[in-house]
Length: 347
Image: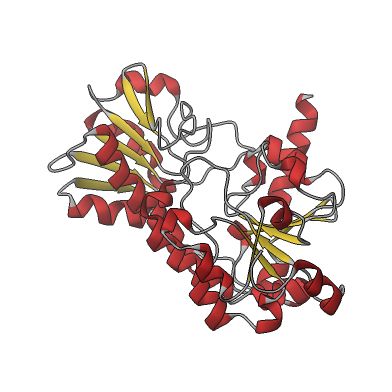
């Protein structure tokens, strides 16, 4: 351990200020990080930094050495970071780390728990609290433009187009491309496609019937629509694949399993695409990692501004308070609750 000692922080601060651990994501090829040393130094109070514990090697994927973190806070082992009162994991825990958490851990990161049964069940064990980044909006306005991490959505769209191009050897120039959805993800995808010379046609949620009618015209279909996990319908069904153009490609950036695209199964950077009935599917579910440095710079700037409140009393911060999906083992989020009810019905 570097800098301030573990026992010193707990003894000097008592329970008034919670400890906060930043852990390395276990998701394969997840290169984004929640915090950078310069933002800790510039945006976070000293008292808070004394209570922050960063896992060894945290910045290695971005060429940020432990010594840079040690200059402004504490660097500890993986196990110690997980023992903090609050644990920040960019993509949330998975089966490989569940045993490292305490029964009453407060966990901070992206969860999408409605679509992840394993994670949802884990969060409901004991008296855990989950503060979801996907629910962090400016107070009293949950429209997309007021999402705290909205640029990450743009990066998702741009990264998905660029990574699919690279790994699938695609050439977008002159290709007819349908983009479903024009929120942040859709805008990122469209910007990247235009720059590559693609012929882009946009379809909002109200234009799906027209998209279905024109399906056979497109070389590439890009999905940027986040799908409600409780829905059982789709924008594109398996039976529709037979109507697609020969050698057509689906790039599902939202990549909800069997969501907007019925045949979508999330993939990884190491194995990013697969074929179903002759149609190639790209469905990497953490595409911004392709632009990990740019994404981390943005995330760190946004998240660092909330860390003082997070360790002191997150209920007094409206952005954090409204992002709580589970508190002390009880579901507060309607979407998560609906998914949990469906799970119970299927048991």
